[in-house]
Image (cartoon, rainbow over all chains, first blue to last red):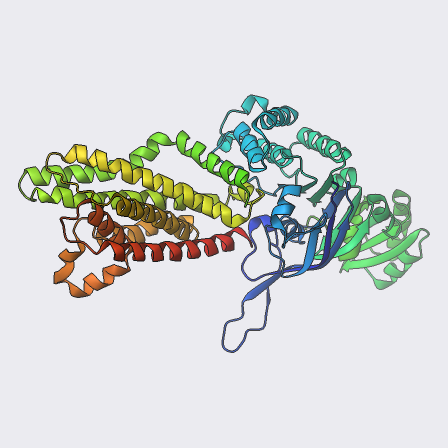
Length: 340
Length: 256
């Protein structure tokens, strides 16, 4: 049975600090209205009306900076976080009302490895399979295959306490695949992995998806979102700010190229002149001495910008050119870099 | 309710317990056996305690071992697994309602407590003999008391384990378990507190009192003890109270 994911107007307000796995850090707490003489409880709005529709068999990415609400979304979809309002479905099952049915359909890799430290790598897979009612023979076969695939065979019978971060992450992913779930959630899957392992992981995720499974990835890594995801939602402050294929989203950045300029000193007239250059679609002053120029070309604009600056006696100190990218899209929508 | 998952969760806990068997046995039996040796053997043979004290002490030691084992078996893993590493997450995602995970922990803790209690009897008897007079008049009452004590210790472990965090484990021992043991009528019968009437009433809030008195009433009924029926009622109430508190705390900790 193929299963997609749907959320309608999801909202989550934490009244106590959100757990680490739910992200939510990076929010300035807002204070709710206290009743009577009671002290107001600090409220953190992690999700603010998020609606998504993820198709069965799709690799979908949630892209956003730390604290955007990505992990909270995954937390709600995987029964670990109770939504304040709104609804979520995995396949035909309401996540909050039909938790057991939903848990059968999903595999979850959380942001931080949460392996069972009392067990060896192989036992972790075997017991996980047993929780899902897989018979002993099949369990053992699947565990061996996954240990091989994730290159963990030589450490299979050791307690995971001594594993490196990358090994724990690989094992977490293997565990999530152990019961062959219809929907796989990967919260920042490649954080802390070396480039080689990252490529192995991407290959495994694509393979898994080719067997018709739905994959939801959260990431703040552009490269990963671009390489892996068929569709993306860019979220910030718990809201969906853009949705589409990576290609569509990149095409949505005005001009495509972004030139970040810094001047020794800067005037409004210069800003106006920059806007009049051929190929420039938008110019934004970012602070006293800097401007972001969106344009349909990159390097060829630099001599013209330099001569304009010279004419206006505004010394050009720094130029940074980025090609059409999701990073630029995020910057365009929020005025902030994804890494900030 | 999904039996396959429940049994697999039990299987996991049994597997981990088996792996840690030696430390587990030492932790369960070393302290009570030393206590039995010093108070039941050294103090009695040197004449500071009467011989009858041996029989009075045994049910109390059994109660301490059971309660300590049950609380430890449930609370300590829970405190660790809910901490920073969130080791319990995998089991919270198993296809079973999360309350059943808590019930599985209680079930397994109660089995360990039962085991501890039933092993203490022959072990203490061997250390203390001769002079121990056990009178098991009603095996059924004894079985009921023992099961209720095992459940109360495991449910108590659930409630405690879900209510305190790792930094307060030391406090749990010094503020909760130690006063419970000393004011739990384990080393003396409840009637011995007759000279301290206020204290005698206050200790009735301590569930360990009913555990010790219940085991005393069913194992060595020749000593004064609280009526077994009152013990059964009180233990049942404590079981229900601790289970309800534990489950609600567990759910609160499991879902944010």
